[in-house]
Image (cartoon, rainbow, N blue to C red):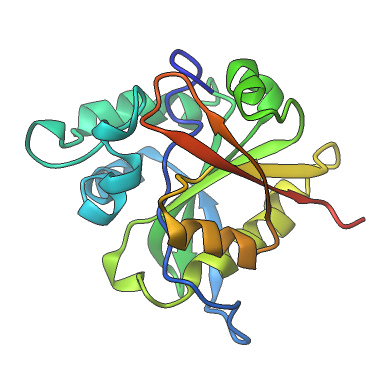
Amino acid sequence: MAGVEAATARRRRTLPPLGPLSPTPPALAFRPLTRDDLTRLRDWLNEPHVAAWWGAGTGSDGLGGEGGDAATLEAVEAAYGPSIDGVDPTANYLIVVDDAPVGLIQWYRLADYPLYAAAIGEPEGAGVDLLIGDASMIGRRLGPAVIDRFVTDVIFAAPDVRRCATGPDPQNARSVRAFEVAGFRWVRDAVIPDERGAEHVMVRDRAD
């Protein structure tokens, strides 16, 4: 989605390093984002490993970074409050590992953001984005397990959603590989208005 279409619904994402799904993945859970989580989310967005892909320098809807680019609590409230209130159709969840919040994952129906959907060539289905905010979780092969579990248990639980798409930065090799391990395949690169560069559009179709 471009420009005015939901500042929270599609952002850059970051993932742990390459690797197969762990045979014994950590205890994962997802819970809806609340206002009590916004201070933690602000801190995550200002972490260098997150800001590189979600920050102010990534496009018109980027949020987070260092110095003058640092996300404030007010800016995070403005970006994510509408989703928490149910006004914005994007659904935001905390990624919880062993009862500890470690990141954010979000999904949305592409039909709710027609300009973005047209730009990536995916008019139907859902979109998904995530960040691993807790730097101590980087390097543990968490990303593919999170993606696979969330797409299977949350997104594809919606009976009308049969396809899920994402668009990592082509330069974010860890993100691209993590989505591949989680069952996504590349379909095209797409230029998004007001974005820093192209998106590497990847999709996963429902098996049944």
